[in-house]
Image (cartoon, rainbow, N blue to C red):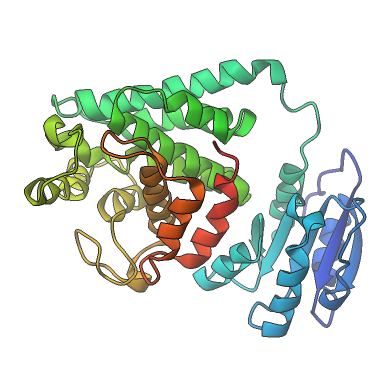
Amino acid sequence: MSALPKPSTKRRLLLASDRSDQSSELANILQTVSEVDTISTSEIPDNPAGHFSGIVVDINLRSAESVQVVRNKLRGEPYRAMPRLFVLADALHHGSMQAWALGATDTISRPFDARGILHRVSAAFPDSTGFDATDRGKTLNRGVVAAHDVMVKIFDKLPAGVPLQFDDIVKAENKILKAIKHSSLREWLTTVGCHHTASYRHCLFVTGFSVAFAQHLGMREDDQRRLARAALLHDVGKAFIPVTILDKPSELTPEETVEIRKHPRLGYDALKAQGSFPPEMLDVVLHHHEFLDGTGYPDGLHGDQISDIVRLTTIVDIYAALVEQRAYRLPFTHANAFAVMEKMQGKLDQHLLHAFRPVTLGSY
């Protein structure tokens, strides 16, 4: 095994464990880049005194007692701005959803990959030389322009018979990720919110919220890219819907609603025929209007038939639609939008919805 990377600075991490071995394997890995204080979950301090860089939580997520203790502690003000890395017994959906609901900003799974863990820790605490703030405006503009170019290819060129290529999306994603990471979600939304084309604006809102959500959760860059791609493309099928319906300044008639509900299948068919788009992107394009209770469209999927990336995109898509300005109604406030979505019990993944709330606070 090759040597682990040397730390550039010593950090101090709080490792909360309810394991009999006090998570000794994980502690040994973390100690190569950090000072580590290991305590039981019952000993998590109410106030960590501001001297810890982050907290690592290694508990049995099936233990109601441990989960309740951690939930109560991490609700405290001192922990809200602190990175929180949760350890999962495996990579199953339920465990990661529960960790996010408890406030995780990132997760790792057993068996441990030492290099991967150290990369996550380093990414959570970048050194101060990583980004020149004077480039902030330029980076934001490059990201918005790149996203706009994708919208042009979707809504103008695709209906005219010019194929959309997977590489078109890949070329844009890096600039988009940098723009949102190094400016802010608020600045992204303010800039794209001025767009005169409603369909462009909605897709760019969904992209901004999706990337900010992924970054808030501490997802790996590959996963951030997957979400950015899915968000950019989720409404590609609307390119084949008449503009008179898309830009109608009033609510749609039942007949027009039937027409616009064709867009997931139209988008899926167009990208599927192209042959270069990954299955998960096609999944989002086809199923982002599906609900967990089976009342969505076009396939009436329910429960575990709906993938995590679709669940996330669906939440962001609905929220963005509610808070956007529409010709026939005023935008919903953050509180009102969440009130609507929280009433959609059984339709939306409530763990993900709870985890999404902090992303939207202060975005306007």
